[in-house]
Length: 155
Image (tube, rainbow, N blue to C red):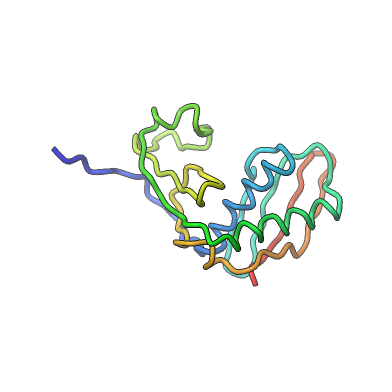
């Protein structure tokens, strides 16, 4: 008998290029800064913002390196694909803390080539060539909370 995949409802329509870029930024932050994925995200068509927990504010050189690294991945024209797995299969492979309590047993994995993969129910481009150029337009540091916020756009 064929099983019907039941996924959670998604209450927001993202702009696919910006949302896919978020995945690339998150993985680049992990690789460059050793931090986790963003702790807060606001993804929109014109500009977006992401918050990260860091031990110190990145230098201007590190910020430029982040921007360059993200754009290098975008320019590789990587395919963006999905796969469906069970929550049990996701354990140990992904952080399941962000899943809602009533999450479906089946979850969707979004992959950006071999560069990034994460659980996600959002909308994405089919290939990173559809994203454009990533540009950090501003950033700020909250030393008390050890939070770094970036605001960015795609051009």
